[in-house]
Length: 234
Ligand SMILES: [Fe+2]
Image 1 (tube, rainbow, N blue to C red):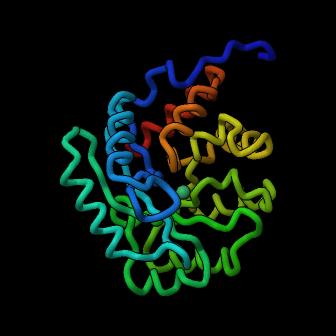
Image 2 (spheres, protein in one colour; image 1 turned 180 degrees about the horizontal axis):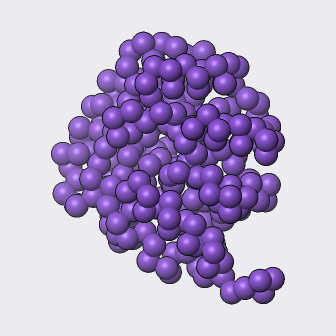
């Protein structure tokens, strides 16, 4: 298996009919895409890949939390977009001191009750475990965004979180090495051990995404694992 031929992901047709569960292509609301025209270009690129559904998940944290702006820009995008991709508004919540307020005001969920959450990359958010427990206790299903990027976690922690039935979302570009070799290795480990439930682009910039997606090459086995995840919740 040492010399197994790897296939370029972008040439595999695997994006046909898939859902992107995590992206920042809603214009003007966070550190993602700025202009409406760029949002439309990203959707047009998704169409060329065959993407079927997109959950737009702007950051909500102490810096970005203008919910009425998010809702207004989503309405504008929905009105201007003429293509076939289903658009849904959700959010990516940072588990910071502002999250308590968000949960009281009502969370923007993926498919009724799934809530996409992230931690700081440098250190585990304060009350990370307690907040996840609280989210689950209130009837939501937490999706942990890009767990492979949390280098402060060890392998046992990943297994502990999975044992709590929390969902894991893979950032596709983690497999390209865009976030560094350690993140890539963790993503490969979590993929090989069937620990991911959903996949997202986490796209903030279309050109950057296009550059890096071309670099992902996968063995047959990893490609099969990825396809299973793409298909299980579509
Ligand atoms: Fe994100």
